[in-house]
Image 1 (cartoon, rainbow, N blue to C red):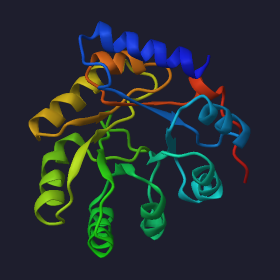
Image 2: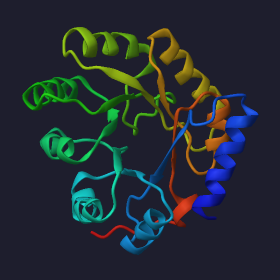
Image 3: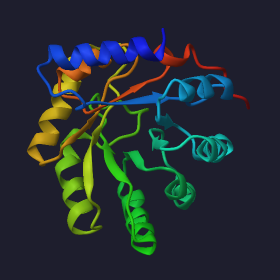
Length: 220
């Protein structure tokens, strides 16, 4: 699979869904990918990338940013509060706001910096105990706290449906939660289901292996 083929499939899915061209942002998930693969995708014109780990991202992106203009980085993995300030230095969007303690510290850091990244709240639509994210039943209260107590401008919601389930009910749940709370962004859909996610209203899709090939095994 190549970047061009994924872009073509994305455009077709947008057309099939009757949506406006340009209404879906493709995030190339470069986590744990070798630098030469990332460089190849950059050279093909892709500028929006997703990373899971703050430290790993700092190990590669400053050099790429010095070489390529217009790079936009999205943190799609869990964010530890002790990595928050570093994350704000590098990332334009954070997709994994998932707990009150992080919201509180993020609010303080944003006030100190005077600028805020694009924020998505991660929702655990499958209510999986091993997975991060706000339980759907507590989402409205959490969003209200983010807005009124922490003064955070939440842009949208993110979810990773259970791997062994049909993603459509989860995508629809996320869309309904976003609509109920007046949120525009829907970060959902990955390599195996991004076209389905687009049909369900995704504004951001996170595609890794379909662009880069299977991920390299992370080191210790």
